[in-house]
Length: 254
Image (tube, rainbow, N blue to C red; front, top):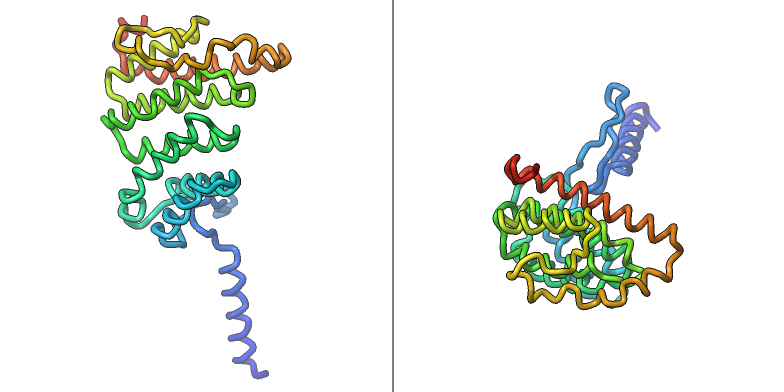
């Protein structure tokens, strides 16, 4: 092999090696430039339409691992940088995604799937933006039911659901929703029963339908576990209360 042929072969090998380590889009790569390890959001390498279409199809599958994979793909989609805002758009899939999310949130099949749903709901709220009152109204009740629920295997999700609810109230809900959720968090911090309606408007809310056996359901867990779960909910309530306090006047906060 001549010298030129060897050089071309070496260049081709280097190019192939570089392509093998490229990120596939949507992950956070590590940049080692100047010796610094800095998270860098990468650009998508696959057309977004294909990613969304495939992910949405997975959401309706019976196999839970397939649904979880679809949720992870959609989360990755929203966390990916695109050259155009059109690439981020989910307009033709938005209603389907929300329907499937609400179905899972109302009765999460597993802890992992429930947490993925709350994560995706937060990203969806950011995507939609401010004053999406109808969107918030649709998700508020199922999230409240999850927070107030007593299924032993999902008690650990209450903090995630409360954080999601408060975040969406802050981003999308408007003044009334922000105040309502703020007071809801305050009642949790005061160790009051948040399932009791706080005003006449919410008196017909059936979010407390599955809370009658609260003590017996949670009582099956060791006291240490119950205490840890309570602290997790209290922590989420405190963080959420502070966030929503930024929407109130100093007098109201005091």
